Length: 168
Image (cartoon, rainbow, N blue to C red):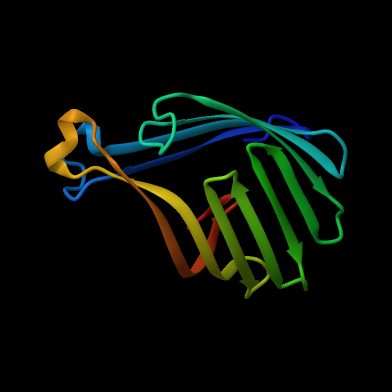
């Protein structure tokens, strides 16, 4: 949501299940909320302030964690994200081909190659992700035992812009 030319705010929300019996009860339902405030400091630099809540995070579950990130965009195809606890960069190799890397130190790493097919409205992408994943076998739910694994994924996908900032 754009408040004015320099201020933006919004929220990312996810819901899922961390069990062999999806959504069996609340203790295996994963909820993640990240409200954020985005401030354009100059045409090339911005600050993002956020708070992340996750009830199934592999570390400090149910603890809201604050974050801050500085974003530098040289407006020639290179963008740098640096903050606590994040780092990333995006580079437009050509107007239709973009490469990016993003990490939530030291747990999550994401490398992505994106190709824009038609005037940025359709995007084909390939992505590699390494993230910690939490799993709760249904037999152990009551005593809060959980298994934490590193989940590695190679993904091929397609993304469509529906309207404005909304995409599928």
